[in-house]
Image 1 (cartoon, rainbow, N blue to C red):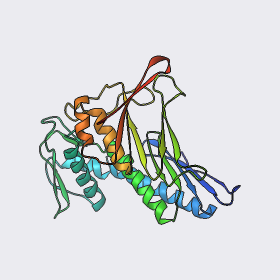
Image 2: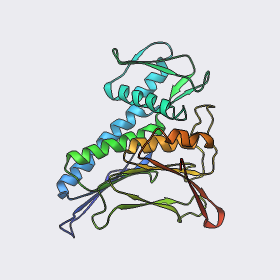
Image 3: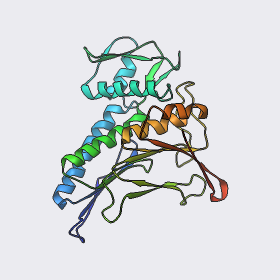
Length: 289
């Protein structure tokens, strides 16, 4: 999909730049306010370029990617990585610890739930603890990318913006130009086109995890290596798009009895189990309340 860009200055106080493109296996939509058309277009183009770079870095299915190189070699030798990859892996290890192992980018056919890779901060290398380890950054990359887009918008002086990754991860700068917040809907999983929940974002982010829109289960349980087949959606709200993305993935994979303990490590974030019923009904249960 080629870059889509639209601009409107019908309201000169709040000119709007809208961009959309495909990257990281999803559609990315960006709405920026307060910029001249040339500045808005340039920023969207730079964001698209950065997302394509990030897509290549974190795509474990592309044999040319740095992540694929790690998966191919790290069981036999320490693999040197660049600063961005090393920092990402450090963050992933920190999240593994604070989610009781429910979030783990490493699948391990030998010993699930244990440390699967070792980082050397002096040499900037990663080495797998044993054969059978494979890294997949799918539950991390979207949140990481949203944080990057947010930083790029702030550097351009943008005060209000909305950034959407496939309707499952959304980040907001400021509030809607004509309201107190940005209103974002979570679609009902049984009644298509119907909202199951509405989120109000203001300098914050949200992420929702569960079955994909075509009904597939795709989130891996790091304790078993199999996909999770839970029927609920997990919605997480908070300031950081990266943390909301990680937490929604971790909470969906974690046993229900463990979810409150995970949330106790993340002050300022809220999580909700959303159960979509036949006929359009919805049940919601706050986690850790």
